[in-house]
Length: 234
Image (cartoon, rainbow, N blue to C red; front, side, top):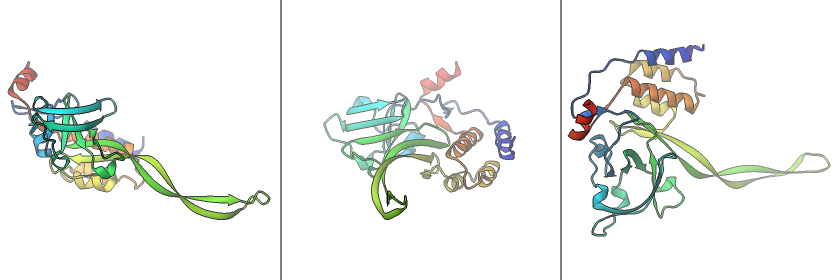
């Protein structure tokens, strides 16, 4: 077994034992369900307190929980006033948080695009597809010699997958890469050393696993309504 793999397994097995959460909070795990509504800040999400409940809004939404994607043609208050895009941080549908994507990350800016948080923990993970333009070299070949006699660049548009991470407490945000992850996990010496020792060619899958291990080692607790806290005790 490679040394790096043994180290990761060792870290996972060495998860610390944490004190139980307060009566009015619950550990943020995959099964945790946030309160539905629109959130104007990440702080509101941490507090599990939507700024607007769906019952107080009028919205035209389309969402797919399996693909972690959602769109909103509009989100308005009951009196017909549209919520400004610049004020919206994200929303929660059926307990799952979605973060609003910036205009530069989407092609159609006439609607609001959201990406669901696929991993919810101290560090959250989400992804989305984005269209980018690249210059591709093309060559014209001489059919007699098989050698190129002309070269040129053309613009080509293609779809790439963006993987992002978000620290729920510090609000730090960035791509899922080694430098960004290292900058988020300084409070966990073992995980910091593990990620720091990864090769520069470490795959996204390896970094994703490191995020999961870090979240397991460093749980976070989210306030819940009293009735929900009572249910969790039963």
